[in-house]
Figure 1 (cartoon, rainbow, N blue to C red):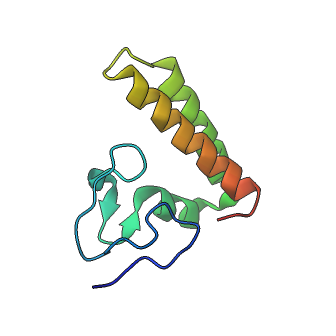
Figure 2: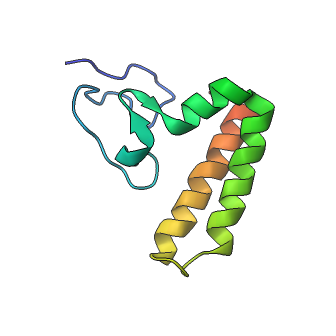
Length: 93
């Protein structure tokens, strides 16, 4: 078993060899192996660009909140993207 040992990760301690699906923070359709889409995007574009992307995506989820599906899930997705932008800005991740 290979565990996530990153203390700052919401997946700390999880077995990385098993599929994990959290529709808010870790949707399985946005991962390729152990690399998540937003990590690949951050690596490709840099922190400043990724922070802007996260803010824009949070706004998108709030704008469409409840119109496409579950209202609470849209709010939690917006929160996840905004929290990611905050953590990158604060150099926590």
